[in-house]
Image (cartoon, helix red, strand yellow):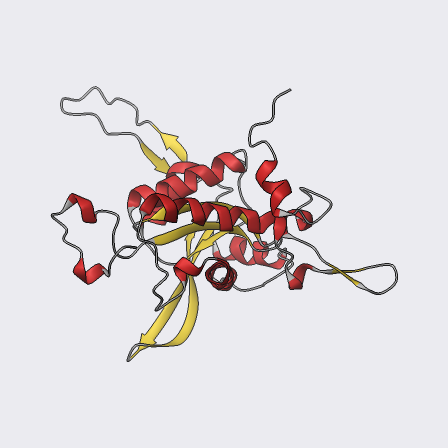
Amino acid sequence: MGKKEKHCDPDNPEDAKQGDNWDHVALDPEHRLLLSVVPGKRTVEKVEALVEDFKQRTQGRPMNLITSDEYKPYRQAILKAYGERVVPERTGKPGRPKAPYYKPSSELKYATVHKTREKGRVVKIDFRVVFGTVAAVMAALKLSKVSHRINTAFVERQNGTDRNRNGRKVRKTYCFSKDWDIHDAVTYFTMYSYNFCWPVRTLRQRGPNGQWLPQTPAMAAGLTDHVWSLWEWLTFPAVQRE
């Protein structure tokens, strides 16, 4: 954003949003539904914002399985959002009491993709169970309709789709964003309009006469019954009033 990361001055406040920026994304792989996105620097605060926003959008219910790459802040953010807060009992002994902490609930299952690299190339892909047991994670995978492996392929594919829809994110281009507010707005525009206005080939369904019927992620998730036009999506009230 604005300039290359190597040209950014960490002591210059004007460069705080310049350079490399990421889209922190929460995706439902079964329906290809984009649930939450938080653009910006890859920081603990952005990860926590993503997990909290995702939790609110899914009404706090526990997920069958959560997966991600091995970026460390995800562990604490997920534990804080879905774990159980424990307040240690006072012992009556002198000294500062133990601080409250979070422990994973019995329903929490979280695994990460582990990539082994040799000479800069990925030679092996495995997974690590962070919360829950291996048996519980494997049981959750068996219930999946789209994959029986821990992977980040669906998010990576979504990133490719968004680069196709948002020219600002194409690699090696003169069209990169120069203004953060515009970059932020266009990111939300392309990401969330994708759910309702972008038919996904792998989600299409056979019609009664054998023809292929287009289907968007929102249709697959049961949120709507038709492909929306951009005009319909843009003019739909964001806040519903009774």
